[in-house]
Image 1 (cartoon, rainbow, N blue to C red):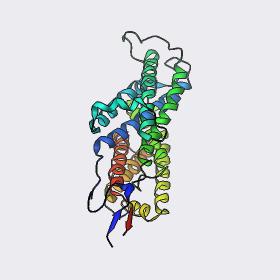
Image 2: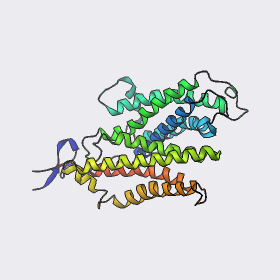
Image 3: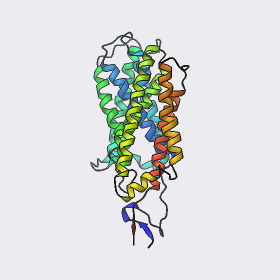
Length: 313
């Protein structure tokens, strides 16, 4: 009997044998969206703990560079998403309605809230901690900076989880059809943001604190990944076959070498050795974490489209 995909998968062996419509644009959008979420959360939490003044432990990275970079990074991600749109002139239609059961509708409105909140947060961070000589913002104490930090933490969590739910809501792809993708992408986004803030922070003590935080976040990410694969391995035949793509299948090498080993294990070991003084301090761990986060999205986007539900007729 010839196995074919069931109807909800949108393809079958005779009329539409392949479904590979998402490429690097979506993977880059998911990565940059998660990175933005991480920047908003980590910077927002830091701003909530301080009342003001440059000497209160925020540092340059979380004080103003993180908030300023968040809307920039998100704009780059939205640019990648725009490139993927088939009907680019119709993107405004997302904002003529709200569909409670549509992840894309939720995402559109979350982005509509994140953009202005992140821009005002960037202004607030720059106004107190930014470099001198900038008109309009330098030297001005923003009265609602801590409240803005709280708002951006909440919106950052929503954005980070949404990047995983966007894939998880697609029931036609068994690899994506998991509620674990939301927490996984959130943890990965936080880890990437911690790595990026480390690259931007000149203060050795604050950099050390970010390094310890990044190590814990990498551990959380690895734990959630384990739960994700456990759910797939204990699911139905389609889920087990989807997990097999990473255990002897076409994506085994790139996942275990590119994502797990180079993107998580090596940075974690290097950061531990640097903290203990057993290795020279370099930017290699942070760069690997960022590349590993991008590789994770790329692998899941491509492998998800290769996974399928099948029945024998």
